[in-house]
Length: 240
Ligand SMILES: [Zn+2]
Ligand SMILES: [Zn+2]
Image (cartoon, rainbow, N blue to C red):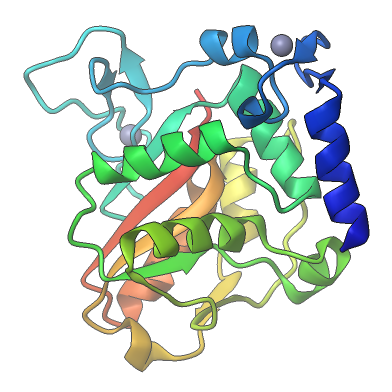
C-alpha cells in the first residue's frame, strides 16, 4: 500500500514520459499519454458515422441513415459502443490497464460520459468480460472488472462479477491471427454459473478493447441462452 501511495506522489511531483511519444506528461489526469497524444486520439463525439450495431468507425460525417459494417452481422450482442478508436492515448491507456488497475481522470471522465450519452440507459446489470482463473492469478486483477466498478459506482446499476465465467484459458490473441482463428479460439470459452441472475436482464457487458468482437459475441451468446433480454457491449476502445 505504501508503495502505491509513494508511486502516486512521485508521479505528481515529476512529470512522467508519455508512453506514446516520450515527451513529458504534464497533467496528472492525462495518465500515461501527453496532451498532444490525447489530441491525436480519435474520441467519438457523435458527429461521425459508426456501425449501428458494433460501433465501428465508418466515416467522419454523420449520416441520417443507420449504417452497418456487416462484419458484425453474425454477432450475438445487440449493440456495441466505445470511447474511441484504439490508437495513441487510448491504446497506451489500454496497455497500461493490463499492467496496473488504474485509470486516469481524463479517461475515466470520457468513459462515464460516453456511457451517459449512449443508448444503453435501460441497462439493468453490469457484467465484466471475465478472465480465466489462470490469467487472473497471473495478473492479480481483471481490467474489465476495474472498468465495470467505475460504471457501477457512477450509475448505481448492479455489478455482477460472478455469473459469467471463462472456463477455457484461451491463448492471447496474436497479431497474426485472422478473424476466423480468433473466433475459434474463444468459441465455447464462456459459461454462466447463475442463470437466474441473468434472466430478463439488460446486460452491459464491459471490456477494455473491442477487436474482432469474437469474445464479446461469445459472451453475449451464453448470456442470451440464459434468457438475457439485451446484451450491450461497452469498451474503452474499438480497433479499426
Ligand atoms: Zn505523447
Ligand atoms: Zn458493425
